[in-house]
Length: 454
Ligand code: KE4
Image (cartoon, rainbow, N blue to C red; front, side, top):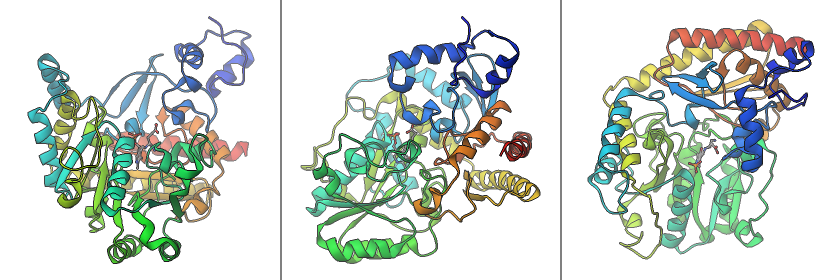
């Protein structure tokens, strides 16, 4: 198979093709050429298609710790971690062993198992605001269910979300969403009806007055306010002082349920997630990613009086064939057990992440790049803008083209970053000093190259 001289192939092939009329197509390239005829955009989730950064996606074959290996045998340092789940690194031996043992017993019944009790209890023990929890199969299912529950409990219809926050692909959320919606420049998605969109109000993150304006106008109609307590889906954006408490107080005053979407931050920033870090108690919390340990698990939970409205205990319907799946429960339970064995694990993770931040900041100042870097714990984003990034209005000033060039330079140097400016990068407990030093060096070289080409 020979590479077609198209504009779509990765940069490092472009250089080679100048010298050789035909070079053998990589396996990754060949697989992607097949994939684009089999699945929309050749992927099963849009952000993976490299549309925001150029070039074709790398196909991976295996992973261990923080190292990925692609189908052509190239190794990369992983800063995606499957978009958050792999805080312990890939293929942790204890998680793999637990999965093997469960595989030999059974993978699914569609009936209750002790494993669901165990993971539910673990989540309830670690997240004080959760009295009762329901397992589902993705973050999207968790947030869809949580807003349906909020509407059922309050008998109100409107929800408030924030521009640039992403809560999965449920219709109500595809309004000024972050992550892949922002990455692909899709202001809203076709297929979402005006009736549905009309029940979603949007405010500006880190701007309490924009929330108060909505409450003044729609107060009694608002069932819930849902937000990422630390945003990952604009890139990493922390809450400014007083923002979360202000929303908490406003919800309490107005009888609005506060939903913390901790699909990304849950067990990422602290055992009790961002709500522990910022000492705020939401009424409902949505979870995902880490609680599945790399297998499909989502969950929503909160105050008992609210959760007991969920069928069959109450009238609000929600169901799922593979919800609480024993294999997925096993991966999540083992992951949380390991994660919470070491009381210092989050301190160590923060220290390592700070080393990466310091290294990149040194490069930025040495090279005269006045760019913004936001970090909370092991969530970090380098924004290609000179503005402080506190909201979508700030994030959207990024030079996404330059980010694309930076991404490609880092990939050529064996660093696998999220292929989009509006995503958070993640470190795991496996990102040691050597890995971080190599990343900082690659960052320096990449910034120097894009500066030269600018
Ligand atoms: P999933 O349905 O993708 O499991 O979860 C949706 C979701 C909900 N809430 C938050 C805060 C999230 O970050 C997500 C999913 N995150 C994206 C990454 N930004 C998943 C990656 C992708 O869409 O492929």
